[in-house]
Amino acid sequence: MPLNRRTFLGSSAVAGASVALVGGATVPAEATGQAQGPVTGRPPKRYSFTVLGTTDLHGNVFNWDYFTDKEFDDSAHNDVGLAKISTLVDQIRKEKGRQNTLLIDAGDTIQGTQLSYYYAKVDPITAKRGPVHPMAQAMNAIGYDAAALGNHEFNYGIPVLRKFEEQCHFPLLGANALDAKTLKPAFAPYVIKKLRTPHGRDVRVAILGLTNPGIAIWDKANVQGKMTFPGLEEQAAKWVPKLRSMGADVVIVSAHSGTSGTSSYGDQVPYVENAATLVAEQVPGIDAILVGHAHAEIPERRVVNKKTGKDVVLSEPLKWGQRLTLFDFDLVWERGSWTVEKVGSQVLNSNTVPEDKKITGLLSDEHRKVVAYVNQVIGTSTAAMSTVDAPWKDEPIIDLINHVQTETVKAALAGGEWAALPVLSQASCFSRTAAIPAGKVTIKDAAGLYPFENTMEARLLTGAQIREYLEFSARYYVQTAAGAPVDTSKLTNAGNTPDYNYDVVSGLTYEIDIAKPAGSRIVNLRFEGKDLDPAAKFVLAVNNYRASGGGNFPHVAGAQQLWANSDEIRNTIIGWVQSAGTVDPARFASVDWKLTRDGTPVF
Image (cartoon, rainbow, N blue to C red):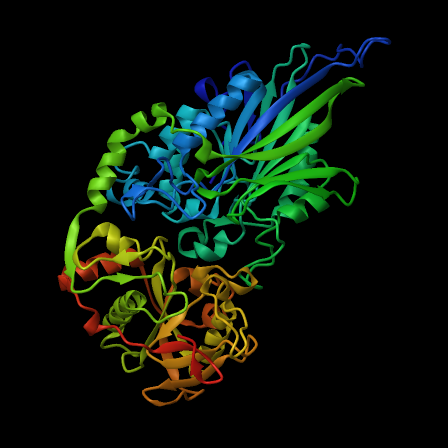
């Protein structure tokens, strides 16, 4: 796939700024007769500008939760969406001057809400005379200057991503997203924006985009043989000196990569997933990094570059448009060029402002279509089910996911070589607010159980491997001594393990002794009432994220694949409810696992 060498003009360029140089475009030669610094006795020329940043928008335009069909709210009363961000951006542009601002994003844009799903799958943007993606419409209207690629950009396949790219009035950047055959950038690596100063000497701001190497694992089915994703540090070291040699006065990296230096995919690729801090430490010439991917809030973090001793300022705004990062740059003209004198960053909270009616009005029709879509009734339920207690109790609503997956895999393997093997299934509590009501069940109810675009696979594992898999999963719980009080608000997420990296496995019975240290917690592990045979073979119904190494669970990524499906698990759940007509927990609910301490149940 050739390097995208488009030049972006018009609404996508900063008002008052000159042409943006994208990707490998040649920088025009500059006139050489410029003054070489301030005249003696006069104050030096100075200029300040602001770079605004978002990340992990995940399809959020409106302050709306399509899974609950009401305005978004959480315990901290955060708000979400680009309509809120637009109001903040307008305020900053009014304060600083539009010509003195840039707006960028650090990726994960087109996946995450039913709004983004609808225009990828139900009324796809790739169709002939198809619609313009709501995220493209909103970001174009707000006036983004560039966005890095996130790993979730690849969830719907490369054709959807390319169409989205075509619809954006700004470049999608990915210096380490390479064509698998040519090893040349498959997207624009960078863009250079010129900001006009009152002194007649433009400031050249280079924005380098970097994405996550984990794409090669998480979206293997979509990218294998088409694209490859080397490490962020390697590609930053390649491109930053080039940008400086091309005359960049300021270099900003937009990186879809967290700061922790850790990876969830183990040793399956030789690159670090959360590498933003490593890039700042190892690659000289970077002034600031807009961080993404980790869904963390970092107003400002200063990292010292090991080669230059200079600070690099990192900032990560909270996901879904909950925060907007501001990088404030102060420059001084000396010795014939602009030098960065000071950089600082902060984040603004989007819950302090109303939605921009320009954005909500622009996409009101799309919003109404999606609300109608998710409220379609597809069946009924004999009982209400909820995930409220699912992180620490075996709840019927998670049993439903495992039941659907088990039935699907059994049907797929029927009549084949592996049909006689018992099928186990893994599932996670992806959302603590998911629910199936008693009575009518809608698409939003069923889809709310599985907010990610995961697909399903079947892998071959032994009993011994299943035990190690469960032990790894049980790290999720904070060790709690027998007799000590149990506070569910502090019981889970040990070691910052997210809910989606805690799996329960159906088809077995077991206890998790949280009084014991991680690694020795699984007790009374049985299959069909007997102690689990370490040599026995099982089929594990597993999502593609886990099967590809996501979460770094043992054995599953290297296990033999017996079957795979390209349909999303949530669609499989929706189809199952439609086919069954009635959701009756009596068909699938059972207490197969529980938390204990020295043999005594916790709950």
